[in-house]
Length: 598
Ligand SMILES: Cc1ncc(C[n+]2csc(CCOP(=O)(O)OP(=O)(O)O)c2C)c(N)n1
Ligand SMILES: CC(=O)[C@@H](O)[C@H](O)COP(=O)(O)O
Ligand SMILES: [Mg+2]
Image (cartoon, rainbow, N blue to C red; front, side, top):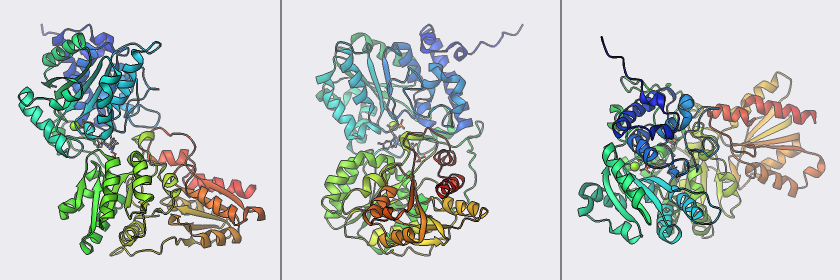
Protein backbone atom coordinates (compact mmCIF):
# COMPACT_ATOMS: atom_id res chain seq x y z
CA UNK A 1 0.00 0.00 0.00
CA UNK A 2 1.37 3.41 -0.92
CA UNK A 3 1.61 5.95 1.91
CA UNK A 4 -0.94 8.76 1.83
CA UNK A 5 0.68 12.15 1.14
CA UNK A 6 1.12 14.10 4.36
CA UNK A 7 -1.35 16.97 4.93
CA UNK A 8 0.48 20.22 4.26
CA UNK A 9 1.56 21.77 7.53
CA UNK A 10 0.51 25.13 6.17
CA UNK A 11 -3.10 23.96 6.16
CA UNK A 12 -2.83 23.49 9.92
CA UNK A 13 -1.55 27.00 10.55
CA UNK A 14 -4.36 29.50 10.84
CA UNK A 15 -2.32 31.74 13.11
CA UNK A 16 1.15 31.76 14.69
CA UNK A 17 -0.18 29.98 17.78
CA UNK A 18 -0.61 26.90 15.58
CA UNK A 19 2.98 26.93 14.38
CA UNK A 20 4.28 27.17 17.93
CA UNK A 21 2.93 23.63 18.43
CA UNK A 22 5.19 22.27 15.67
CA UNK A 23 8.55 20.60 16.20
CA UNK A 24 11.70 22.28 14.93
CA UNK A 25 11.87 19.79 12.07
CA UNK A 26 8.28 20.60 11.17
CA UNK A 27 9.09 24.30 11.21
CA UNK A 28 11.69 23.68 8.50
CA UNK A 29 9.11 21.84 6.43
CA UNK A 30 6.59 24.62 7.04
CA UNK A 31 9.11 27.11 5.68
CA UNK A 32 9.41 25.12 2.45
CA UNK A 33 5.63 25.11 2.04
CA UNK A 34 5.42 28.80 2.86
CA UNK A 35 7.98 29.59 0.19
CA UNK A 36 6.03 27.61 -2.41
CA UNK A 37 2.79 29.32 -1.38
CA UNK A 38 4.39 32.76 -1.63
CA UNK A 39 5.72 32.05 -5.11
CA UNK A 40 2.38 30.67 -6.22
CA UNK A 41 0.44 33.67 -4.86
CA UNK A 42 2.75 36.31 -6.35
CA UNK A 43 2.75 34.52 -9.69
CA UNK A 44 -0.98 35.40 -9.81
CA UNK A 45 -0.83 38.90 -8.37
CA UNK A 46 2.59 40.28 -9.19
CA UNK A 47 4.29 42.35 -6.52
CA UNK A 48 7.31 42.29 -4.26
CA UNK A 49 8.69 38.78 -4.42
CA UNK A 50 12.42 38.62 -3.75
CA UNK A 51 12.51 40.23 -0.31
CA UNK A 52 9.76 37.95 1.02
CA UNK A 53 11.45 34.82 -0.30
CA UNK A 54 14.61 35.86 1.53
CA UNK A 55 12.88 35.98 4.89
CA UNK A 56 10.71 32.85 4.76
CA UNK A 57 12.73 30.96 7.41
CA UNK A 58 13.13 34.14 9.45
CA UNK A 59 9.37 34.75 9.39
CA UNK A 60 8.62 31.23 10.62
CA UNK A 61 11.33 31.40 13.29
CA UNK A 62 10.24 34.81 14.60
CA UNK A 63 6.63 33.73 14.97
CA UNK A 64 7.76 30.44 16.55
CA UNK A 65 10.02 32.06 19.13
CA UNK A 66 8.19 35.29 19.93
CA UNK A 67 4.65 35.53 21.21
CA UNK A 68 3.06 37.55 18.42
CA UNK A 69 0.80 39.52 18.43
CA UNK A 70 1.58 40.42 22.06
CA UNK A 71 5.19 40.73 20.99
CA UNK A 72 5.22 43.42 18.31
CA UNK A 73 6.86 42.40 15.06
CA UNK A 74 7.55 45.37 12.80
CA UNK A 75 8.73 44.79 9.24
CA UNK A 76 10.69 47.67 7.74
CA UNK A 77 9.20 48.77 4.40
CA UNK A 78 7.15 45.53 4.73
CA UNK A 79 7.51 44.63 1.07
CA UNK A 80 8.87 41.36 2.54
CA UNK A 81 5.75 40.72 4.62
CA UNK A 82 3.79 38.41 2.29
CA UNK A 83 4.95 35.22 4.09
CA UNK A 84 4.06 36.92 7.38
CA UNK A 85 0.59 37.66 6.00
CA UNK A 86 0.13 34.03 5.00
CA UNK A 87 1.01 32.85 8.50
CA UNK A 88 -1.15 35.42 10.26
CA UNK A 89 -4.64 34.54 9.09
CA UNK A 90 -4.56 36.11 5.64
CA UNK A 91 -3.72 33.10 3.50
CA UNK A 92 -7.27 32.96 2.14
CA UNK A 93 -6.91 36.52 0.78
CA UNK A 94 -3.26 36.45 -0.28
CA UNK A 95 -4.22 36.23 -3.96
CA UNK A 96 -5.97 39.61 -3.65
CA UNK A 97 -2.68 41.33 -2.83
CA UNK A 98 -2.34 44.89 -4.12
CA UNK A 99 -5.75 44.84 -5.82
CA UNK A 100 -8.76 47.02 -5.18
CA UNK A 101 -10.53 45.73 -2.08
CA UNK A 102 -7.76 43.19 -1.45
CA UNK A 103 -4.84 42.91 0.89
CA UNK A 104 -2.34 45.74 0.97
CA UNK A 105 1.16 45.00 -0.27
CA UNK A 106 2.45 46.37 3.02
CA UNK A 107 1.66 45.84 6.69
CA UNK A 108 -1.34 47.78 7.84
CA UNK A 109 -2.79 48.20 11.32
CA UNK A 110 -6.36 48.04 10.04
CA UNK A 111 -5.68 44.72 8.31
CA UNK A 112 -4.49 42.57 11.22
CA UNK A 113 -3.54 42.60 14.89
CA UNK A 114 -0.33 40.97 13.71
CA UNK A 115 0.56 44.24 11.95
CA UNK A 116 1.20 46.49 14.94
CA UNK A 117 2.60 49.26 12.75
CA UNK A 118 2.11 50.21 9.11
CA UNK A 119 5.23 50.67 7.04
CA UNK A 120 6.13 51.20 3.37
CA UNK A 121 8.60 54.07 3.39
CA UNK A 122 11.83 52.61 4.62
CA UNK A 123 13.81 52.85 7.84
CA UNK A 124 10.97 53.61 10.25
CA UNK A 125 10.86 50.24 12.02
CA UNK A 126 13.43 50.82 14.75
CA UNK A 127 11.86 54.12 15.82
CA UNK A 128 8.41 52.53 15.93
CA UNK A 129 9.67 49.46 17.80
CA UNK A 130 11.46 51.71 20.25
CA UNK A 131 8.17 53.53 20.83
CA UNK A 132 6.47 50.21 21.62
CA UNK A 133 9.34 49.21 23.92
CA UNK A 134 9.33 52.51 25.77
CA UNK A 135 5.53 52.37 26.16
CA UNK A 136 5.74 48.82 27.51
CA UNK A 137 8.07 50.02 30.24
CA UNK A 138 5.63 52.74 31.31
CA UNK A 139 2.37 52.35 33.25
CA UNK A 140 -0.46 51.70 30.79
CA UNK A 141 1.75 50.67 27.87
CA UNK A 142 0.93 47.50 25.95
CA UNK A 143 3.01 44.51 27.14
CA UNK A 144 5.36 42.45 24.98
CA UNK A 145 8.68 42.63 23.27
CA UNK A 146 9.29 44.84 20.25
CA UNK A 147 11.16 43.47 17.27
CA UNK A 148 12.17 45.50 14.21
CA UNK A 149 13.25 43.60 11.09
CA UNK A 150 15.23 45.94 8.88
CA UNK A 151 17.14 45.35 5.67
CA UNK A 152 20.73 46.32 4.98
CA UNK A 153 19.51 48.90 2.46
CA UNK A 154 17.03 50.47 4.85
CA UNK A 155 19.66 50.56 7.56
CA UNK A 156 21.58 53.16 5.55
CA UNK A 157 18.99 55.87 6.18
CA UNK A 158 19.61 58.55 8.78
CA UNK A 159 16.34 57.76 10.50
CA UNK A 160 17.48 54.23 11.34
CA UNK A 161 20.58 55.64 12.97
CA UNK A 162 18.62 58.25 14.91
CA UNK A 163 16.67 55.37 16.44
CA UNK A 164 19.72 53.18 17.10
CA UNK A 165 21.36 56.13 18.81
CA UNK A 166 18.36 56.49 21.12
CA UNK A 167 17.67 52.85 21.87
CA UNK A 168 19.64 52.29 25.02
CA UNK A 169 18.35 55.48 26.58
CA UNK A 170 14.68 54.69 26.03
CA UNK A 171 14.18 50.93 26.18
CA UNK A 172 15.09 48.14 28.55
CA UNK A 173 14.77 45.52 25.81
CA UNK A 174 14.53 45.98 22.07
CA UNK A 175 15.31 43.57 19.27
CA UNK A 176 16.60 44.68 15.90
CA UNK A 177 17.01 41.99 13.26
CA UNK A 178 19.36 43.16 10.52
CA UNK A 179 18.19 41.24 7.45
CA UNK A 180 21.33 41.48 5.38
CA UNK A 181 20.98 40.19 1.83
CA UNK A 182 23.64 42.46 0.36
CA UNK A 183 21.07 44.20 -1.83
CA UNK A 184 18.85 47.22 -1.73
CA UNK A 185 16.76 47.32 -4.93
CA UNK A 186 19.98 48.02 -6.75
CA UNK A 187 23.40 47.27 -5.34
CA UNK A 188 23.69 48.91 -1.94
CA UNK A 189 26.03 51.88 -1.77
CA UNK A 190 28.26 53.53 0.78
CA UNK A 191 30.64 52.68 3.55
CA UNK A 192 27.99 50.93 5.63
CA UNK A 193 27.32 48.45 2.84
CA UNK A 194 31.03 47.63 2.81
CA UNK A 195 31.03 47.25 6.59
CA UNK A 196 28.07 44.86 6.47
CA UNK A 197 29.82 42.86 3.79
CA UNK A 198 32.88 42.55 6.01
CA UNK A 199 30.71 41.47 8.94
CA UNK A 200 28.88 38.99 6.73
CA UNK A 201 32.01 37.37 5.46
CA UNK A 202 34.30 37.63 8.47
CA UNK A 203 31.76 37.48 11.28
CA UNK A 204 32.94 38.09 14.79
CA UNK A 205 36.59 38.21 13.63
CA UNK A 206 35.71 41.56 12.16
CA UNK A 207 34.05 42.80 15.33
CA UNK A 208 30.88 44.84 15.55
CA UNK A 209 32.29 47.96 17.12
CA UNK A 210 29.69 50.12 15.45
CA UNK A 211 26.75 48.40 17.14
CA UNK A 212 28.67 47.97 20.40
CA UNK A 213 29.25 51.70 20.47
CA UNK A 214 25.55 52.32 19.93
CA UNK A 215 24.77 50.21 22.99
CA UNK A 216 23.56 47.06 21.24
CA UNK A 217 24.54 43.52 22.06
CA UNK A 218 25.49 42.07 18.67
CA UNK A 219 24.64 38.48 17.73
CA UNK A 220 25.64 36.83 14.50
CA UNK A 221 25.98 36.77 11.66
CA UNK A 222 23.68 33.77 11.41
CA UNK A 223 22.58 31.97 8.23
CA UNK A 224 18.98 33.09 7.73
CA UNK A 225 18.09 29.94 5.81
CA UNK A 226 19.33 27.55 8.50
CA UNK A 227 16.25 27.03 10.64
CA UNK A 228 17.94 25.34 13.63
CA UNK A 229 20.59 28.07 13.79
CA UNK A 230 17.97 30.80 13.53
CA UNK A 231 15.78 29.25 16.21
CA UNK A 232 18.79 28.89 18.47
CA UNK A 233 19.95 32.48 18.20
CA UNK A 234 16.44 33.91 18.59
CA UNK A 235 15.60 31.69 21.57
CA UNK A 236 18.83 32.61 23.33
CA UNK A 237 18.30 36.30 22.63
CA UNK A 238 14.70 36.25 23.82
CA UNK A 239 15.62 34.41 27.00
CA UNK A 240 18.69 36.40 27.87
CA UNK A 241 18.45 39.94 26.52
CA UNK A 242 18.73 42.68 29.11
CA UNK A 243 19.07 45.60 26.71
CA UNK A 244 18.92 46.44 23.01
CA UNK A 245 20.04 43.48 20.92
CA UNK A 246 20.91 43.38 17.23
CA UNK A 247 20.83 40.03 15.48
CA UNK A 248 22.63 40.02 12.16
CA UNK A 249 20.97 37.56 9.78
CA UNK A 250 22.47 36.72 6.39
CA UNK A 251 19.83 35.99 3.77
CA UNK A 252 19.55 35.66 0.03
CA UNK A 253 17.05 37.87 -1.76
CA UNK A 254 14.85 35.71 -4.00
CA UNK A 255 15.89 32.52 -2.17
CA UNK A 256 14.40 29.36 -3.62
CA UNK A 257 13.15 30.76 -6.91
CA UNK A 258 15.75 30.59 -9.64
CA UNK A 259 14.46 33.50 -11.71
CA UNK A 260 14.56 35.78 -8.67
CA UNK A 261 17.87 34.54 -7.30
CA UNK A 262 19.57 35.12 -10.62
CA UNK A 263 18.10 38.59 -11.21
CA UNK A 264 20.35 41.56 -10.44
CA UNK A 265 17.75 42.90 -7.98
CA UNK A 266 17.02 39.52 -6.40
CA UNK A 267 13.55 39.55 -7.96
CA UNK A 268 12.63 42.67 -5.98
CA UNK A 269 9.33 43.23 -7.80
CA UNK A 270 7.63 41.32 -10.53
CA UNK A 271 4.67 41.25 -12.85
CA UNK A 272 2.53 38.13 -12.81
CA UNK A 273 4.68 35.22 -13.97
CA UNK A 274 4.80 31.61 -14.97
CA UNK A 275 6.01 29.56 -12.00
CA UNK A 276 7.65 26.87 -14.12
CA UNK A 277 9.73 29.21 -16.28
CA UNK A 278 9.79 32.44 -14.30
CA UNK A 279 8.69 34.31 -17.45
CA UNK A 280 6.82 37.49 -16.58
CA UNK A 281 3.47 38.36 -18.18
CA UNK A 282 3.63 42.01 -19.07
CA UNK A 283 1.37 43.72 -21.60
CA UNK A 284 3.30 45.32 -24.45
CA UNK A 285 3.83 49.04 -23.95
CA UNK A 286 1.91 51.37 -26.27
CA UNK A 287 4.04 54.40 -25.54
CA UNK A 288 7.33 55.11 -23.78
CA UNK A 289 7.14 55.60 -20.05
CA UNK A 290 7.48 59.08 -18.59
CA UNK A 291 10.50 57.80 -16.68
CA UNK A 292 12.30 56.76 -19.86
CA UNK A 293 11.50 60.06 -21.60
CA UNK A 294 12.86 61.91 -18.59
CA UNK A 295 16.05 59.83 -18.61
CA UNK A 296 16.66 60.19 -22.35
CA UNK A 297 15.96 63.93 -22.24
CA UNK A 298 18.35 64.38 -19.35
CA UNK A 299 21.05 62.39 -21.11
CA UNK A 300 20.58 64.59 -24.20
CA UNK A 301 20.92 67.72 -22.08
CA UNK A 302 23.97 66.34 -20.26
CA UNK A 303 25.73 65.71 -23.55
CA UNK A 304 25.56 69.46 -24.16
CA UNK A 305 26.34 70.61 -20.65
CA UNK A 306 29.03 69.11 -18.40
CA UNK A 307 27.51 70.82 -15.36
CA UNK A 308 24.42 68.64 -15.47
CA UNK A 309 24.52 65.87 -12.91
CA UNK A 310 21.94 63.59 -11.35
CA UNK A 311 21.12 62.28 -7.91
CA UNK A 312 19.04 59.29 -6.88
CA UNK A 313 18.24 57.97 -3.42
CA UNK A 314 18.56 54.22 -4.04
CA UNK A 315 16.23 54.19 -7.04
CA UNK A 316 18.51 54.24 -10.11
CA UNK A 317 16.24 51.89 -12.08
CA UNK A 318 12.96 53.42 -10.95
CA UNK A 319 14.04 56.95 -11.88
CA UNK A 320 15.78 55.93 -15.12
CA UNK A 321 19.08 57.25 -13.83
CA UNK A 322 20.73 53.87 -14.38
CA UNK A 323 20.77 54.87 -18.06
CA UNK A 324 22.29 58.23 -17.19
CA UNK A 325 24.94 56.47 -15.08
CA UNK A 326 25.84 54.21 -17.99
CA UNK A 327 26.87 57.25 -20.03
CA UNK A 328 27.99 59.62 -17.27
CA UNK A 329 29.18 57.46 -14.36
CA UNK A 330 31.02 60.37 -12.74
CA UNK A 331 28.00 62.62 -12.84
CA UNK A 332 25.46 60.27 -11.27
CA UNK A 333 25.27 59.98 -7.52
CA UNK A 334 23.35 57.21 -5.80
CA UNK A 335 23.29 58.27 -2.15
CA UNK A 336 21.36 55.25 -0.85
CA UNK A 337 18.01 55.49 0.94
CA UNK A 338 18.74 58.99 2.16
CA UNK A 339 16.33 61.49 0.63
CA UNK A 340 17.14 64.24 3.11
CA UNK A 341 20.81 63.94 2.32
CA UNK A 342 20.02 63.76 -1.42
CA UNK A 343 18.30 67.15 -1.34
CA UNK A 344 20.98 68.96 0.64
CA UNK A 345 23.73 67.23 -1.35
CA UNK A 346 22.06 68.57 -4.50
CA UNK A 347 21.94 72.00 -2.90
CA UNK A 348 25.68 71.81 -2.30
CA UNK A 349 26.29 70.81 -5.90
CA UNK A 350 24.15 73.72 -7.10
CA UNK A 351 25.93 76.18 -4.81
CA UNK A 352 29.20 74.98 -6.32
CA UNK A 353 28.04 75.79 -9.84
CA UNK A 354 26.71 72.44 -11.02
CA UNK A 355 23.26 71.90 -12.50
CA UNK A 356 21.92 69.03 -10.38
CA UNK A 357 18.76 67.06 -11.15
CA UNK A 358 17.56 65.49 -7.94
CA UNK A 359 15.34 62.64 -9.17
CA UNK A 360 13.03 61.34 -6.45
CA UNK A 361 9.61 59.77 -6.29
CA UNK A 362 7.04 62.29 -5.11
CA UNK A 363 6.22 60.24 -2.02
CA UNK A 364 9.88 59.90 -0.97
CA UNK A 365 10.60 63.60 -1.53
CA UNK A 366 8.28 64.19 1.43
CA UNK A 367 11.13 63.01 3.60
CA UNK A 368 13.39 65.78 2.31
CA UNK A 369 10.97 68.64 2.87
CA UNK A 370 12.85 70.62 5.49
CA UNK A 371 15.96 70.34 3.36
CA UNK A 372 13.95 71.58 0.40
CA UNK A 373 12.78 74.62 2.34
CA UNK A 374 15.86 75.39 4.39
CA UNK A 375 18.73 74.35 2.18
CA UNK A 376 17.32 74.88 -1.30
CA UNK A 377 14.44 77.36 -1.39
CA UNK A 378 15.56 79.93 1.17
CA UNK A 379 18.95 80.07 -0.51
CA UNK A 380 17.34 80.21 -3.94
CA UNK A 381 19.60 77.46 -5.21
CA UNK A 382 18.93 76.10 -8.70
CA UNK A 383 18.30 72.49 -7.81
CA UNK A 384 16.15 70.76 -10.42
CA UNK A 385 13.66 68.35 -8.84
CA UNK A 386 12.56 65.61 -11.21
CA UNK A 387 9.58 64.22 -9.33
CA UNK A 388 8.56 60.82 -10.64
CA UNK A 389 5.46 58.81 -9.56
CA UNK A 390 3.45 62.01 -9.13
CA UNK A 391 -0.25 61.25 -8.75
CA UNK A 392 -1.83 57.89 -8.01
CA UNK A 393 0.58 54.99 -8.51
CA UNK A 394 -1.84 52.09 -8.21
CA UNK A 395 -0.88 48.84 -6.50
CA UNK A 396 1.43 50.40 -3.90
CA UNK A 397 -1.56 52.33 -2.55
CA UNK A 398 -1.76 55.31 -0.27
CA UNK A 399 1.78 55.18 1.10
CA UNK A 400 3.28 55.61 -2.36
CA UNK A 401 0.78 57.98 -3.95
CA UNK A 402 2.39 61.21 -5.10
CA UNK A 403 -0.34 63.46 -3.79
CA UNK A 404 1.21 66.37 -2.01
CA UNK A 405 4.20 67.70 -3.91
CA UNK A 406 2.38 70.43 -5.85
CA UNK A 407 0.91 71.75 -2.62
CA UNK A 408 4.14 71.64 -0.67
CA UNK A 409 6.26 73.06 -3.48
CA UNK A 410 4.04 75.76 -4.92
CA UNK A 411 3.63 77.42 -1.54
CA UNK A 412 7.37 78.03 -1.31
CA UNK A 413 8.53 81.46 -2.43
CA UNK A 414 10.67 81.40 -5.54
CA UNK A 415 10.12 77.75 -6.49
CA UNK A 416 9.01 77.08 -10.07
CA UNK A 417 6.66 74.11 -10.44
CA UNK A 418 5.85 72.44 -13.77
CA UNK A 419 3.90 69.35 -14.84
CA UNK A 420 3.81 68.01 -18.39
CA UNK A 421 0.52 67.08 -20.02
CA UNK A 422 2.25 64.31 -21.99
CA UNK A 423 5.66 62.84 -22.67
CA UNK A 424 6.52 65.40 -25.38
CA UNK A 425 5.90 68.22 -22.92
CA UNK A 426 8.11 66.36 -20.45
CA UNK A 427 11.01 66.45 -22.90
CA UNK A 428 10.58 70.23 -23.19
CA UNK A 429 10.34 70.62 -19.43
CA UNK A 430 13.60 68.77 -18.88
CA UNK A 431 15.22 71.21 -21.32
CA UNK A 432 13.52 74.10 -19.49
CA UNK A 433 14.86 72.95 -16.13
CA UNK A 434 18.34 72.36 -17.54
CA UNK A 435 18.49 75.93 -18.80
CA UNK A 436 17.00 77.53 -15.69
CA UNK A 437 19.42 78.96 -13.13
CA UNK A 438 17.19 81.44 -11.35
CA UNK A 439 16.20 79.27 -8.41
CA UNK A 440 14.73 75.87 -7.59
CA UNK A 441 12.59 74.30 -10.29
CA UNK A 442 10.50 71.13 -10.19
CA UNK A 443 8.83 68.99 -12.80
CA UNK A 444 6.38 66.31 -11.71
CA UNK A 445 5.24 63.43 -13.87
CA UNK A 446 3.28 60.23 -13.37
CA UNK A 447 4.19 56.56 -13.15
CA UNK A 448 3.75 54.53 -16.31
CA UNK A 449 3.30 55.11 -20.00
CA UNK A 450 2.80 58.41 -21.75
CA UNK A 451 -0.14 59.01 -24.04
CA UNK A 452 1.72 58.34 -27.29
CA UNK A 453 2.47 61.98 -28.12
CA UNK A 454 5.14 62.29 -30.84
CA UNK A 455 8.44 63.08 -29.19
CA UNK A 456 10.44 66.09 -30.32
CA UNK A 457 13.90 65.48 -31.69
CA UNK A 458 15.17 67.48 -28.76
CA UNK A 459 13.56 69.36 -25.91
CA UNK A 460 13.30 73.13 -26.24
CA UNK A 461 13.17 75.42 -23.19
CA UNK A 462 9.69 76.83 -22.57
CA UNK A 463 8.71 80.31 -21.55
CA UNK A 464 8.49 80.18 -17.76
CA UNK A 465 4.92 80.55 -16.54
CA UNK A 466 3.25 80.28 -19.93
CA UNK A 467 0.28 77.96 -20.45
CA UNK A 468 -1.66 77.24 -23.64
CA UNK A 469 -5.17 76.74 -24.91
CA UNK A 470 -5.40 73.23 -26.31
CA UNK A 471 -9.01 73.13 -27.53
CA UNK A 472 -11.21 76.24 -27.65
CA UNK A 473 -14.87 76.17 -26.69
CA UNK A 474 -17.36 78.46 -24.98
CA UNK A 475 -19.29 78.81 -21.74
CA UNK A 476 -17.16 76.51 -19.62
CA UNK A 477 -13.40 75.98 -19.47
CA UNK A 478 -11.15 73.34 -17.95
CA UNK A 479 -7.62 74.37 -17.00
CA UNK A 480 -5.44 71.30 -16.51
CA UNK A 481 -2.13 71.04 -14.69
CA UNK A 482 -0.29 67.88 -15.68
CA UNK A 483 -1.26 64.59 -17.21
CA UNK A 484 -5.03 64.79 -16.61
CA UNK A 485 -5.17 66.75 -19.86
CA UNK A 486 -5.99 63.59 -21.83
CA UNK A 487 -8.92 62.86 -19.51
CA UNK A 488 -10.00 66.47 -19.93
CA UNK A 489 -10.04 66.05 -23.69
CA UNK A 490 -11.99 62.82 -23.21
CA UNK A 491 -14.54 64.75 -21.15
CA UNK A 492 -14.72 67.36 -23.90
CA UNK A 493 -15.67 64.66 -26.40
CA UNK A 494 -18.36 63.30 -24.05
CA UNK A 495 -19.80 66.76 -23.42
CA UNK A 496 -19.86 67.58 -27.13
CA UNK A 497 -22.60 64.95 -27.47
CA UNK A 498 -24.73 67.14 -25.16
CA UNK A 499 -23.91 70.27 -27.13
CA UNK A 500 -21.47 71.56 -24.51
CA UNK A 501 -18.27 73.02 -25.98
CA UNK A 502 -15.67 72.68 -23.26
CA UNK A 503 -12.58 74.83 -23.62
CA UNK A 504 -9.52 72.84 -22.55
CA UNK A 505 -6.29 74.56 -21.57
CA UNK A 506 -2.96 73.34 -20.25
CA UNK A 507 -1.42 75.46 -17.48
CA UNK A 508 1.99 73.75 -17.59
CA UNK A 509 3.03 75.77 -14.51
CA UNK A 510 1.52 75.81 -11.04
CA UNK A 511 4.08 78.45 -10.19
CA UNK A 512 4.42 81.02 -11.57
CA UNK A 513 0.83 80.94 -12.72
CA UNK A 514 -0.08 82.15 -16.17
CA UNK A 515 -2.25 84.93 -14.79
CA UNK A 516 -3.08 86.31 -18.21
CA UNK A 517 -4.39 82.93 -19.38
CA UNK A 518 -6.37 82.39 -16.18
CA UNK A 519 -7.98 85.81 -16.33
CA UNK A 520 -8.75 85.40 -20.02
CA UNK A 521 -10.47 82.05 -19.37
CA UNK A 522 -12.34 83.47 -16.39
CA UNK A 523 -13.55 86.52 -18.25
CA UNK A 524 -14.62 84.73 -21.42
CA UNK A 525 -16.46 81.81 -19.74
CA UNK A 526 -19.29 81.46 -17.22
CA UNK A 527 -17.55 78.63 -15.41
CA UNK A 528 -13.94 77.60 -14.89
CA UNK A 529 -12.70 74.28 -13.53
CA UNK A 530 -9.15 73.30 -12.72
CA UNK A 531 -7.85 69.75 -12.62
CA UNK A 532 -4.65 68.24 -11.28
CA UNK A 533 -3.21 64.94 -10.06
CA UNK A 534 -2.76 65.99 -6.48
CA UNK A 535 -4.32 66.85 -3.15
CA UNK A 536 -6.36 69.88 -2.16
CA UNK A 537 -4.15 72.90 -1.64
CA UNK A 538 -2.22 72.64 -4.88
CA UNK A 539 -2.74 74.14 -8.32
CA UNK A 540 -6.49 74.75 -7.95
CA UNK A 541 -5.97 76.65 -4.70
CA UNK A 542 -3.42 78.92 -6.34
CA UNK A 543 -5.79 79.61 -9.23
CA UNK A 544 -8.61 80.36 -6.76
CA UNK A 545 -6.33 82.78 -4.94
CA UNK A 546 -5.44 84.48 -8.22
CA UNK A 547 -9.11 84.81 -9.21
CA UNK A 548 -10.10 86.12 -5.79
CA UNK A 549 -7.37 88.72 -5.84
CA UNK A 550 -8.51 89.87 -9.28
CA UNK A 551 -12.08 90.22 -8.00
CA UNK A 552 -13.39 87.74 -10.58
CA UNK A 553 -15.62 85.87 -8.13
CA UNK A 554 -17.43 89.14 -7.38
CA UNK A 555 -18.50 89.10 -11.01
CA UNK A 556 -20.17 85.70 -10.63
CA UNK A 557 -17.70 83.22 -12.13
CA UNK A 558 -18.54 79.63 -11.21
CA UNK A 559 -15.34 77.90 -10.15
CA UNK A 560 -14.44 74.34 -9.12
CA UNK A 561 -11.05 72.80 -8.33
CA UNK A 562 -10.91 69.08 -9.20
CA UNK A 563 -8.32 67.48 -6.94
CA UNK A 564 -7.78 64.22 -5.12
CA UNK A 565 -10.45 63.69 -2.47
CA UNK A 566 -9.48 64.57 1.08
CA UNK A 567 -8.82 60.97 2.11
CA UNK A 568 -6.19 58.33 1.48
CA UNK A 569 -7.18 55.91 -1.29
CA UNK A 570 -6.21 52.25 -0.91
CA UNK A 571 -4.50 50.25 -3.63
CA UNK A 572 -6.21 49.65 -6.96
CA UNK A 573 -5.18 50.26 -10.54
CA UNK A 574 -4.42 53.92 -11.30
CA UNK A 575 -7.46 54.00 -13.58
CA UNK A 576 -9.69 52.74 -10.76
CA UNK A 577 -8.23 55.30 -8.40
CA UNK A 578 -8.78 58.17 -10.83
CA UNK A 579 -12.34 56.98 -11.43
CA UNK A 580 -12.95 56.83 -7.68
CA UNK A 581 -11.59 60.35 -7.37
CA UNK A 582 -13.89 61.56 -10.14
CA UNK A 583 -10.91 62.58 -12.23
CA UNK A 584 -11.47 60.38 -15.28
CA UNK A 585 -13.26 61.61 -18.41
CA UNK A 586 -16.70 60.57 -17.12
CA UNK A 587 -16.07 62.15 -13.71
CA UNK A 588 -14.91 65.41 -15.25
CA UNK A 589 -17.88 65.51 -17.61
CA UNK A 590 -20.26 64.90 -14.71
CA UNK A 591 -18.65 67.72 -12.76
CA UNK A 592 -18.96 70.09 -15.71
CA UNK A 593 -22.65 69.23 -16.15
CA UNK A 594 -23.20 69.81 -12.43
CA UNK A 595 -21.52 73.21 -12.55
CA UNK A 596 -23.57 74.25 -15.57
CA UNK A 597 -26.76 73.15 -13.82
CA UNK A 598 -25.70 75.42 -10.97
C1 LIG B 1 12.11 56.36 2.13
C2 LIG B 1 12.10 55.30 1.05
N1 LIG B 1 12.93 55.43 0.00
C3 LIG B 1 12.94 54.50 -0.96
C4 LIG B 1 12.12 53.43 -0.88
C5 LIG B 1 12.08 52.41 -2.02
N2 LIG B 1 12.57 51.11 -1.56
C6 LIG B 1 11.74 50.14 -1.18
S1 LIG B 1 12.50 48.74 -0.72
C7 LIG B 1 14.00 49.42 -1.06
C8 LIG B 1 15.25 48.61 -0.84
C9 LIG B 1 15.36 48.21 0.57
O1 LIG B 1 16.49 47.44 0.73
P1 LIG B 1 16.60 46.55 2.02
O2 LIG B 1 16.17 47.33 3.21
O3 LIG B 1 17.95 45.98 2.06
O4 LIG B 1 15.49 45.44 1.81
P2 LIG B 1 15.51 44.19 0.80
O5 LIG B 1 14.59 44.59 -0.32
O6 LIG B 1 16.90 43.95 0.37
O7 LIG B 1 14.97 43.09 1.61
C10 LIG B 1 13.87 50.72 -1.53
C11 LIG B 1 14.98 51.58 -1.95
C12 LIG B 1 11.26 53.34 0.22
N3 LIG B 1 10.37 52.36 0.36
N4 LIG B 1 11.29 54.28 1.17
C1 LIG C 1 8.65 48.90 -1.83
C2 LIG C 1 8.98 50.11 -2.57
O1 LIG C 1 8.92 51.18 -2.03
C3 LIG C 1 9.37 50.06 -3.98
O2 LIG C 1 9.77 48.80 -4.35
C4 LIG C 1 8.22 50.55 -4.81
O3 LIG C 1 7.18 49.61 -4.77
C5 LIG C 1 8.68 50.76 -6.22
O4 LIG C 1 7.67 51.34 -6.95
P1 LIG C 1 7.74 51.38 -8.54
O5 LIG C 1 7.27 50.04 -9.01
O6 LIG C 1 6.78 52.48 -8.90
O7 LIG C 1 9.14 51.66 -8.91
MG1 LIG D 1 18.68 44.19 1.44
